[in-house]
Length: 195
Image (cartoon, rainbow, N blue to C red; front, side):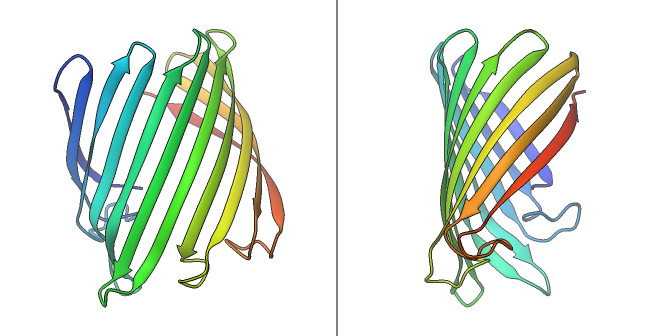
């Protein structure tokens, strides 16, 4: 999503601040914009962390788009038990073109439950609701998109995570290639290498 530089500063044992610069949005290594990326993470207790992250500035500046705006995410991470983790995330995005016309107005809520089965295995579920105006639908028309994902995390090595998942998507209007009121099911797997 972002290519740039991000600095991390530990304000205290429970507070971490982030700040940096990115080359727009989904731009790879092409300078497609200029935006600030930053936030704050606060450990409110041993089992509860609250994080605020934001990006603001020019998201795109090329022949196809000229878009500037603001997005933030607020994430609450709760260790319910030693093995069960609950995460609540809300996202807000608003952007406009160089004439001041609205390009996107979106709001979403994601909820995760992650259960650690062993040192190598964990199971998880995620439910997402996303309300959007613009991009796939005309500005002034709201569309609701929903997704339910179930998956596993497998760690064959301390630096490798394999994540198979099955995902169900449905919407209340024609969004992202789906017909009005249509749904789709997707199976995917990815592998993360940590270094």
